[in-house]
Length: 365
Image 1 (cartoon, rainbow, N blue to C red):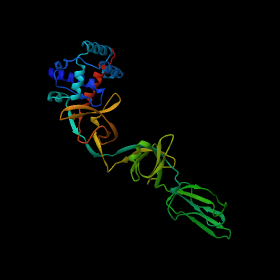
Image 2: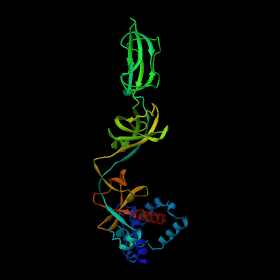
Image 3: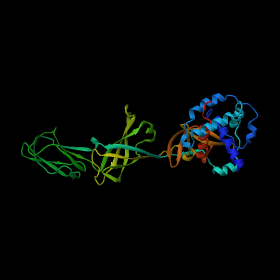
Image 4: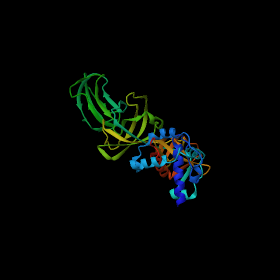
């Protein structure tokens, strides 16, 4: 067990010396500590200048006393012996022994390509979309004789809605040309009407239309035909299924968002015009993307990192740029290649120890 502790100390010390000079820093873990005291180090002041920017890791269990102790211990080496040798050793890397693997329960996985899908949170409003409206008019001149429906009445196509008495005394019937709800009545009995007069309006309430906003960065995930599942504060326990029917070609210059129209099934006529809605837009892709398990990714000094095993066991830190997350995997846009071996279990421990070492050595002389 003492051998492992010594080795792990070398691992994190060696890695610390290289991690901030390159994104390709390597853990060296199984060389005896005594091997690293043969030469005087160079470039020590430059390393400390960089490390001074990383001395705020109190949340990792360090305090000021610990930091100064690390500072004093570090300065005890005359001329900072061994620093250059540590750096060289970090770049070359050595194998992680079985004892170390067992202690941190290290697991790895090969980087490959996967089909990725996911969900986007969307927010919007039931719109008064003219495509879902029908207006009842009269071809001719006359007066309103009688109105046979009221506001909110559900009507079917062909239902008798209004009667108009022509100037010659004959009665004309106004019928609905769609199934829907009476939204507006623009006239009353005895009003004079002509062919330009709108008498009533009907809205299709079996299918409502919502306008939701998506951010510009998410545009690549959106296409017509995708499913959307929405809720409203009036019916928080009920989910309404919808479908993307239109994506605006314009990006709002103030919010950097894009309007997306969604047709929503409303068989129980619970949704109303103007209601606010929120929910999830479900997306998927037939294309594959390079991806790693979410557990492989850690953050260090504000950067996303992974630990890559080279030649079977050498552990090398890599910064990565990430994309979408789906089913426990995250897309890797930059930083890895297909076939790389990444640490999927144990990476948090490695990162935590690295953060501690960074704090301990992060004080300028």
